[in-house]
Length: 127
Image 1: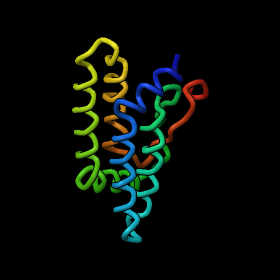
Image 2 (image 1 turned 135 degrees about the vertical axis):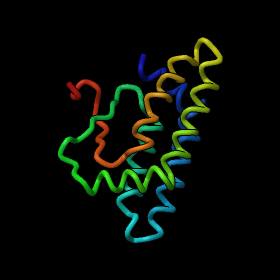
Image 3 (image 1 turned 90 degrees about the horizontal axis):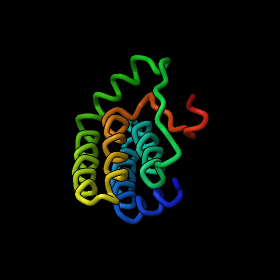
Image 4 (image 1 turned 180 degrees about the horizontal axis):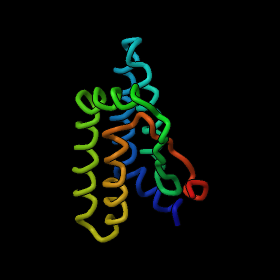
C-alpha cells in the first residue's frame, strides 16, 4: 500500500517539493558556511520524494549549534518550504483520494521548518 501511495505522491506533489528542497540545497552549497544546511536540505528532498514508510526522529543530543542553525534555516528557507507543504496539502485534501497525501504534507511541515537535528528513518525501526 505504501508503494502505491509513494507513486501517487511522487506524481502529485513529491517531485515539485523535492525540487524546492534541492534548489534550497544548491543555494546553501554556494557559501561554505551554509553547507550543513545544504546537506539537510538534500536529505529532506529524498524524504519528500518517497515519504511513506519513513518517519522523522529528533536527535536529543543535537546541541546548541543545531538550534542556532535551525533558527537561521527558518528565516531563510524553512518558512517558504513549509508554506509550500501547507499549500500542497490543502490542494491535495480537496479530493478524497488526496487526503492521505495532504496529511503527509502536513506531517512534513515540522521537519521543513527545523531540519537540523532530525534523522529520517524507516518507520519499522523508529520504535
